[in-house]
Amino acid sequence: MLRVSALFAALATCYGWHTIAHTLISQVAQLSLTESEKKTLSMLLDDWQPFFPNTSDLTTAAVWLDTAKCDRDEQDCKFASGDHRLYAGAVADRKFSSWHYADVPINPDGVELSEEEQDIYAEDHIVWALGETLYSLGTSTNLWSLNLNLRYMLHLMGDIHQPLHAAGMYAKPGN
Image 1 (cartoon, rainbow, N blue to C red):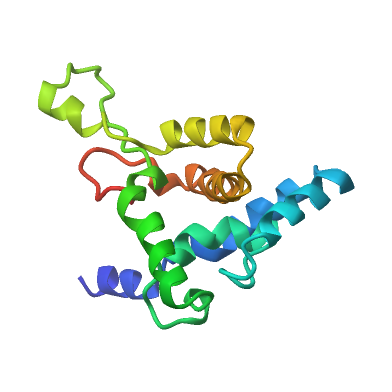
Image 2: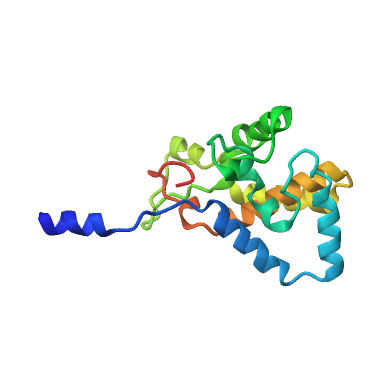
């Protein structure tokens, strides 16, 4: 028993995806962009600078969605105040929280799911949200909408590659 306890004590702490992975993924994406594309994206993201300072480049915009709903007193959470902070939190957290993940049933034997079990997976999820976001990016001409959808797309591309954001039906949603 002492050996098992020592093993668990030696395990490193596991931290969430948050900033590092999102910024890394967006930085890798930037490597494939032309200077013209970078300039266009910069101009688009700069439009929100007065409302959400320091979130106007691809790397910080990719984290915006998590930062907007952040309520901890940490440096990562301090980028907006007042009404802008409240609005961002509402947008990021309430309506769209299921957009960060897709719960996938662990069903290796192909057992038919009951109607109740199927309903669990019928709600909006990250794959659906990415499709909607990409559609909006391709059809909208509104600068605000383009900015919001670009931030969502950047963030969701990071989340969809996070292994715990595609979990089984007995895990907490998104983990």
